[in-house]
Amino acid sequence: MVHQVLYRALVSTKWLAESIRTGKLGPGLRVLDASWYSPGTREARKEYLERHVPGASFFDIEECRDTASPYEMMLPSEAGFAEYVGRLGISNHTHVVVYDGDHLGSFYAPRVWWMFRVFGHRTVSVLNGGFRNWLKEGHPVTSEPSRPEPAVFKATLDRSLLKTYEQVLENLESKRFQLVDSRSQGRFLGTEPEPDAVGLDSGHIRGAVNMPFMDFLTEDGFEKGPEELRALFQTKKVDLSQPLIATCRKGVTACHVALAAYLCGKPDVAVYDGSWSEWFRRAPPESRVSQGRSEKA
Image 1 (cartoon, helix red, strand yellow):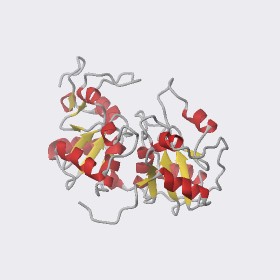
Image 2: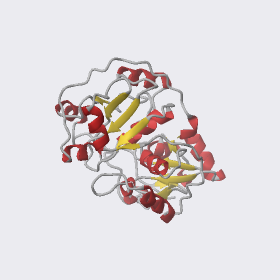
Image 3: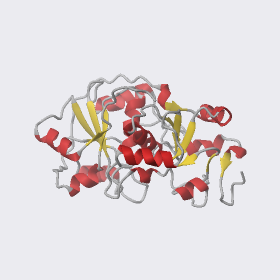
Image 4: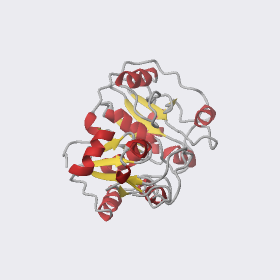
């Protein structure tokens, strides 16, 4: 395991509320609402416009991605990411705090946390408890859109935190990395369908271990403590002293695995960006495992 001083991956609602109250928001501290919801359920941008943490900008994960890719939610280019976050007033010297409005307390925020880290930005944190607990605790909200002064951000891709299809395929033989899938057990096993998916059966990459991301969160929507998180990894026989790849359907909840490991002192978990969305469409059939009727492997 890498021994280094890690930047705090979580900030509390109390800390953020106090930072806003004392006028700390600005070029040195920016807040992002990274909410995203399945089509036909909730409208993230509309909800942001109705109420959000004062000073927060809306981070549209549909915009800040590789829109030319046939797979879901793939990373944008260095230039694309730099231009997008620069427009939100974020420079390489900004502490970025990310939250979302999911009822679980956190869903998409860890993906944006990881995106900043994979593009070389260390000073980024997730709001522990999310907007759900911000509201529950009675902290201020506003409908006023933020208009931050644009900044210059230089993105440098850290390839050690990112895995490609080819690298995961090679790992089937070399087994240099442990592989953890963060989807629900039913989707992992192939006994439940992938939600809102056309032409995408459920199942998993051969050799993967299942750790549903919801297990990292308390019922109240907060991240569990390091001791509880370590116990979860140990129960699944995942060795945090060894290399680890996180995967899911589209590289979003896999970032919860990266965050949980980071909170245990392991900052080097790589995310397979294409995840099952890409693997199902490209990988040899024998590398796909499913108990469902449509997949024999």
